[in-house]
Image (cartoon, one colour):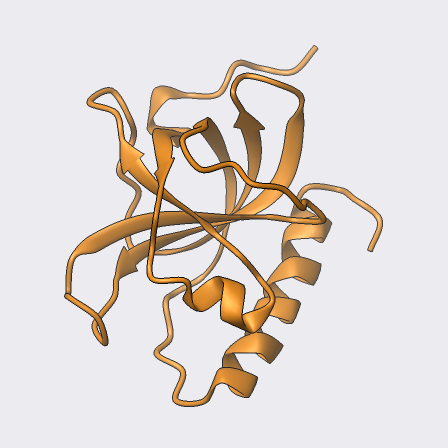
Length: 131
């Protein structure tokens, strides 16, 4: 039996429209409008489990941080690994399992795509999934 996640590990929010940068790279993310009881993790990239509208959990990567190139506001966004579908307006519950890395500003889209691929491999390892 697994232990219940601690409240500081649970990020909760509704999926809202973002800037579409993840989609352009081939890694669409769900941008979250956090609920009042949501954790607000430190800036970084995390391996996580994601529940969409309280359904079965799926592997994901949470990015928490400031978009310096856009508007310098703190954001939470999730890439759900191996998921395709429209989840705008859905409620997400994100359980943080482990920290992958600090945020790094990437100059080129190709560089960011390579980094995301590395993050996916690292997240699958932390979540004990086959690559």
